[in-house]
Image 1 (cartoon, rainbow, N blue to C red):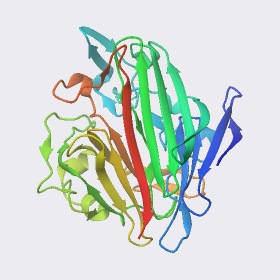
Image 2 (image 1 turned 180 degrees about the vertical axis):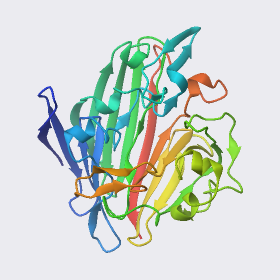
Image 3 (image 1 turned 45 degrees about the horizontal axis):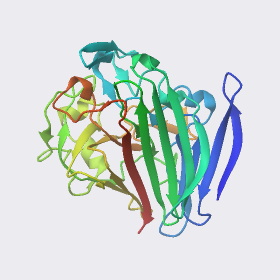
Image 4 (image 1 turned 45 degrees about the vertical axis):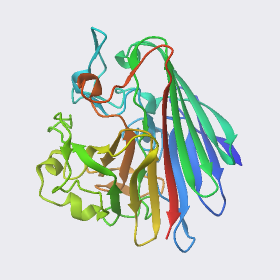
Length: 350
């Protein structure tokens, strides 16, 4: 069952629409057409008590401002492109940039701030919503007109599938992801420092002080980035390591996932509640961000302010700055090709 309602209005008068779907006694999801966004996800703990386990913006103003990325579909290019410089087929395109001087998540007016067209869908005993957006040529400086689709489907057993597709009429780059922040204790209920994380990756990408990859993949062995066995997040991010300091005393890095095809990327657990979420994906990388820069200026739907480590993002994607790194997997999309990506967040309680 999918219910639909109009909520708050945008500055131009258009209304934001919310869809709710899932099992009354199990996992339920709420998505918004503003940013094709996962706004809330309620999951039971080991005793059956339900809580919203993703961070959300408290108002439309927040979702167009400081909370723009919370739960949103980000693009046309997730993560960073250094200096806003996109070389492609012998032509250099200059993209819109944020105050950092780099292009982050598609630019200052990326997909996260757009109203997508949404319709309810049902497939293989799953229910959800499909969103569609047309991004014209020149949007934020990117070449090519891109038509993007994002489909959320929730299965009765608590697996949330997010499938991305895109096509273009001219060569461009596409790299889409979901930017949900998880707190398995519940939205606004403390930090994720008491969570436990495993990432199936033997390598990661070190970054410079502006969070641009330095280049080669580095092994995780002997570092706080070695999460091949589950480790407490608090123990990892408080370690004395230059890469943690570069990211603001925490993780904001890409792990280079083991294997190819659809496989597990990570497992996040909250021992106190028993909740856990397993992340599976077709993508080559996983950006883990521990919310190091939350400073209390954002207030969530619960009325609680989000301070450092209020949530953790597990963003399945291609690597940052790939257009300027020919050694990284390509993100180029050409006419006649179809961009496809799939990620599943599988919730359970033990």
